[in-house]
Amino acid sequence: MVPRPSRIAAGSLTLLAVVALARCASRPCPVITDTLKAVTINKNSQASPADTYLYYSTGDTVAWVPYASTHALTITFSKLKFPGGANNEPPFAGGTNGQDQVFQSGSGTLYSPAINPALKALFDKDPSLQLIYPYDQQIGGVSQDGRIIIMK
Amino acid sequence: MKRYTAGLLAAVSLLGFASCNRRGASTSTGPTLYPFTVDRFSQASPLERTLHIANQDKAVWVAYEAKHTLTITFNSKLYPAIAKGEPPFEGGANGADQVLSDTSGTVYSPAINHKLKDVFAANPGVTELDYTFDQKVDTLTKDGRIIIMK
Image 1: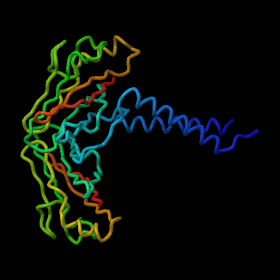
Image 2: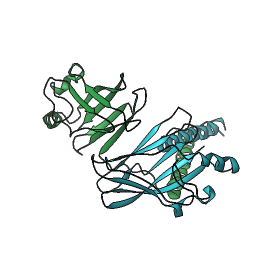
Image 3: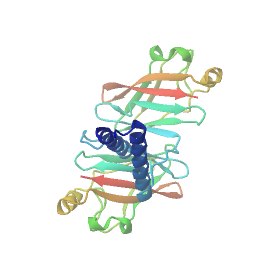
Image 4: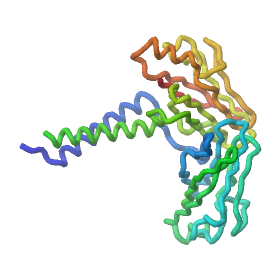
């Protein structure tokens, strides 16, 4: 007799659930509770993670952390790469409509301001809106790309 | 029977992926700096990180705002028994607490204690060493965990 696919799927799901429960019982499973998202930048200016998701409604912010505390870090959101749906608004508070938004640290961690409050009206108008802001992160003269994705 | 086998293999693959996702990179990809964020209630996120000696991984703790004193304490009483008193990172002393602190709000770990390589070598069946720590922003203290692997 050939087993039905649904039985295979049910068996697989049961196995997954049992093992997942066992793992969480042996040590606490991570729970994301923080609204500060950390992005590390390595020696080659590579950001990890490359994409960072921020929610306006929960007041998320981001911290960029260079690989060593003594390194200067520059984050640049080019106005040319602002998403079309953002009406030229920069991603974070303190910027100017239609202008690049640049953050610099002389050394060490760089904290973003709050998400630009001008974006709230856009999310109120379209709750499914995702605003993708590419940026360049630079350490030691090397630039690489990263992205901030802002949602309601 | 083949379908059962395929289903089982798919489940195992998913488990492997989920496990790697939860614990960080499972393969050697070069040195990685793994961040914890610490909120105003001293809650770390994520609760645990896995560091690999072979990758020369490090950890960094980032407070919710700059210029808050952040202190990470590895209590020697909670060191894994098999580590025989060795702290998780370089710069510590055998049998003593290892305390990392910075007033800037960001604390970088030193490199993983090279003596832990000897611990793994002497205990081939051991795949990971779990080190519990307390993180404190300002005055509140909470728990977190570092898992060190070969």
